[in-house]
Length: 330
Ligand SMILES: Nc1ncnc2c1ncn2[C@@H]1O[C@H](COP(=O)(O)OP(=O)(O)OP(=O)(O)O)[C@@H](O)[C@H]1O
Ligand code: SF4
Ligand SMILES: [Mg+2]
Image (cartoon, rainbow, N blue to C red; front, side, top):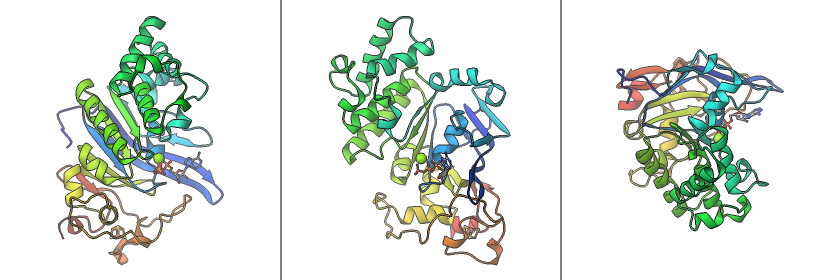
């Protein structure tokens, strides 16, 4: 829940990322605004291609040309990220804001041992004075993320670990500098169910222990309902709903969120029949000025044939639907 008396740790307004496509420029992140408070977990959900990863890669300055990123405001811990040069931004990345990428195998460098990858981050950001100190801290990090025989495995390569262990190594690498914000992009998608639960519990524990803020990007609403304080739902590059996690899950204020909930078998605590959302998300490319969910929505009327803004609906919640209040309470 937004607390007006506190300055958010991360505040982003009007973030837009455009990639050229054959059909024309695609706003794959389109005027996205959000904040993450100190110590809070923000869940970011949406189907594949909705712009979840690119949103946060854009914040970190990791989108490569021809991708173009712009924003009205991007503040982190009182610093204006838009005013910082690439060097200063790189210093924040990894040290104060860490990201674990979706695919651990490609995100970790296969040619470097685990020790090298973790210690490099620490030494690069002056979080360790010497190699010995960095190695000792790396062992501690590996222990913290639950890697058995951490000291012995320090000089192994990523391919020598299982998928679940690689995910943990990536988390250890991300946490090596004790960041204030961890962006965990689908940290569990590639893992089997038991390991998924362990990795999520680990992130929750570290959040408590290190008093870290977390952005948890996931397809799985079941994951966010357990972990997140607030949820931001993305569809076709836009935020379509946001609010306190429990409230969004129990009383969705956008037909897309309601559709996601209805299609989630993992939400077995809620007594709902399972219905997939009909149709498909629009292809990336120029979009007409209409509600982007129009073709898939079961509530469409003439009133929806216009560009629909994200509107506050009270209690820190917002929805991009002409029927927002009715959808939430009907
Ligand atoms: N380098 C690129 N060039 C062109 N389009 C891109 C590029 N990277 C991503 N996109 C497009 O941007 C859109 C958003 O991608 P993004 O990876 O953020 O989706 P996502 O919500 O994270 O999906 P997933 O759940 O599959 O990870 C997609 O349509 C994708 O095809
Ligand atoms: S604005 Fe209309 S088409 Fe869009 S989500 Fe709401 S009801 Fe559906
Ligand atoms: Mg992604």
